Structure formats: C-alpha cells, structure tokens
Amino acid sequence: MRYRRADAAGATYFFTVNLSDRKSDLLVDHIDILRDALRKVRQTRPFEIVAMVVMPDHLHAVWKLPDGDADFPLRWSLIKAAFSRKIPKAETIRESRKSKRERGIWQRRYWEHQIRDDVDLEAHVAYIYINPVKHGYVTKAIDWPHSSIHREIRLGRIDANWGVGESPENGQWGE
Image (tube, rainbow, N blue to C red; front, side, top):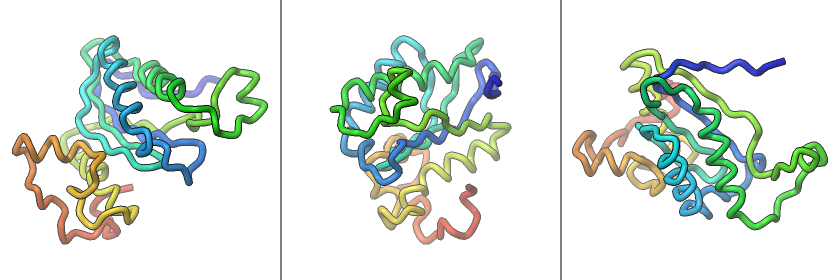
C-alpha cells in the first residue's frame, strides 16, 4: 500500500517531524548539525522556510516549494539522512531498521498539511511560534532561541511582544 501525500507543485506546506525518542534533546543539542543539513539540502533542492521552530524532540516548519516542484519527501529524507550521519551512534536500533540500514533517530513518517489560504498560513505560523510556550520551555515566544520568529522580528514583520499575554491553551493557536 502506498502512503498518500499531498503533491501540489509550488505549494506551501506545514510539517511536524519527530524524533523516535520523544524524550530526547537531540535536535537542540545538535542544532548546528540540523542547520547545516537544512542549508545543504536547500542548496541542491531549493525551498523557502516561511516559519520554523526546533524543539528538543520535534520540529515544525512551513515551507514554500518552487514552482513546478512538489518533492518535499525527498527533501525531508535528505535532511534526516544528513543529520543522522553526523550524530554519534548511541540510539537503540530495532531489527526492522537494521535490515533497511536505518538509524533509530527519526520517526519514519511525519505530518504534512498543504496550506489552503492566508488564514490557514497565519494559523500554522502562529502555532509554530507559540509551540515553545505551549510546551512550557519559555513564557514568551521570543525567548526560544530555535525559532524563525527572530528573523521576522529583525525584519520588522512582527512585534517583539508577539503572543505575550496570550494563552497557548485557549484554542487560538490550533493543534
């Protein structure tokens, strides 16, 4: 059975990508390796990172793909592989993964959602920025260092107090 994914060329997508070990801090402990993997893949398979947050055990991203291109699965595969190659082998690897020469770092699947319109985009970007607050890592979105919110503030697109005083549990931020 083939796993069905959206495949609209040039579309904008929201992603959630998880580590296998949901108690791990691997992504933030090795943030420079992840950034390097993203940078290298973007050099050969361009895409725009509209918004992104890296949490200890998962990440959320909104990507805009180039016109005529819908191949986000290859991009994620390359990013995961580049990251995994640079991480010391310390994880438990199940036999099913060993037989396929896979590491045990990432969950095999990930969540993707094709962004439908500007309202949908705004909701998903807000979800990304508020995620560290929702998980209790910080009290203000700006305090989380691994978020594209810093770029948006620097460029003057949003205020530095974005989300302050709002509860991530009130349903406004989606899930």
